[in-house]
Each structure stands twice: as structure tokens, then as C-alpha cells.
Image (cartoon, rainbow, N blue to C red; front, side):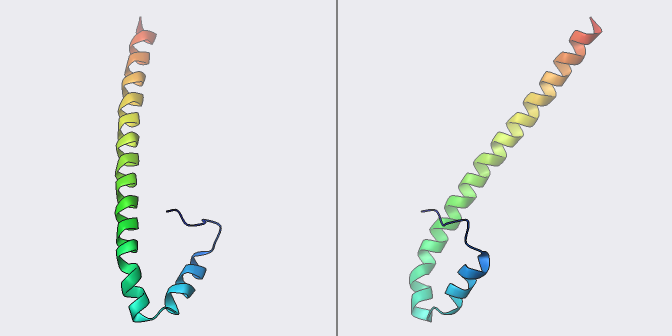
Length: 69
């Protein structure tokens, strides 16, 4: 579940600040699941970035070789 990114972070902090301990404990598993999902997506994006860096380096090397011919 995605949050509306147009809301300022302060609005979320304010909402958390007014929650009771019971409400916070109830929301904790959802927050942990959301964090885990974000971490998985971040790892996937980092892997894509690494793959692209390697591809660019290989293409640069090929281009340099072709320019020498």
C-alpha cells in the first residue's frame, strides 16, 4: 500500500505523535512490513544500477576498441 507522496512528512509525524501506545503497537507490524518491502525494492533498484554500470563500462570499452580500428 503506497502513501500519498504529496503529503509533507510532518503530517505523518503529527499523526504518529497523537497515537496512543496501543495504536502504535497495532500499526507496528504494518510499518515493519512496509519497511521490508521498501528494502526489497531498494535492493532490486541497486542491482539494476550495478548491472547498468557494468553495461556502460563494457560499451565504453567496445567503443574505444572500435575507435582504434
